[in-house]
Image 1 (cartoon, rainbow, N blue to C red):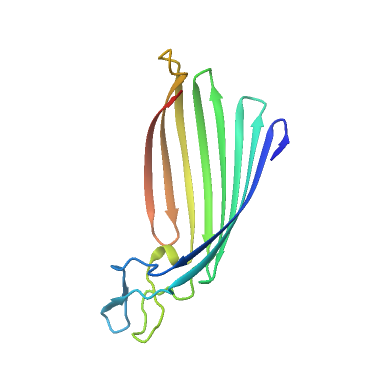
Image 2 (image 1 turned 180 degrees about the horizontal axis):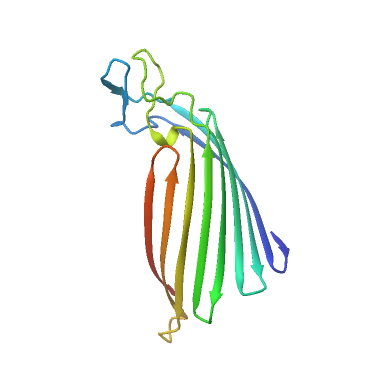
Length: 181
């Protein structure tokens, strides 16, 4: 939806129905007895996602992109994600991007790091645990009008740091090359 000459907004809803074996069959769950047991997940999952996006052109040749997502499923998982990206042109062919994202979720009711043998549902998958995740990053890109038949050749390099409260930390480096026809 065009909200103004410099603002675009978007709302979206998604429904996903999953059925069958929904986990990785090699996942193991620590049991109170000191051994490992199989992960036991429900065989059906209904997922809902509500998304809002806003893009605003800034008068100094920049752009601000905002994103929000609410997620809920019938396993009891509730999550919120928010992201902001700031793009800035630096000269005719160079641009910069700064990114921040935060994600918070409550975890599923059957997540555990020590399950009783009798548990009918159990998972030790850290993606199903309660946590808060943050991503900080940036990128630099260049657009080069090199080949007459191609309108533009683009190249970019980016770095992001992903950290979660349940001890997952990842450094992400991206390198991209593109051609606009």
